[in-house]
Amino acid sequence: MENQPVISKKHKFVCDDRKSATINGVIKVDSTSETQVVCEINGSMLVVLGKNLHVKKLDINESILEIEGQIDQMRYTEKSKPFFKRLFK
Image (cartoon, helix red, strand yellow):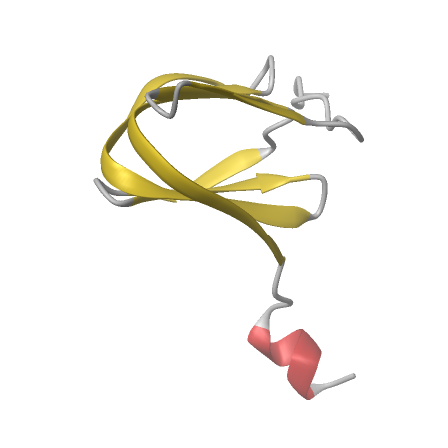
């Protein structure tokens, strides 16, 4: 059996002076750009918005994501179900 990342039920978001952030409990990173980073944590999505954002460190096995740049906002959204699952309930 392959080594799967440990899915943590808890997560932690630590922001240091709005210049960097460390997120523990990350299951996967969906997208990154200079203005947003989207990652999955415990069945929800965490969206980090800002300017000049970049991923400093990503370790899925340890469930750690480190981001640098100007962090303006973070928000949680529900993970959307695949289209066909919504269509054929």
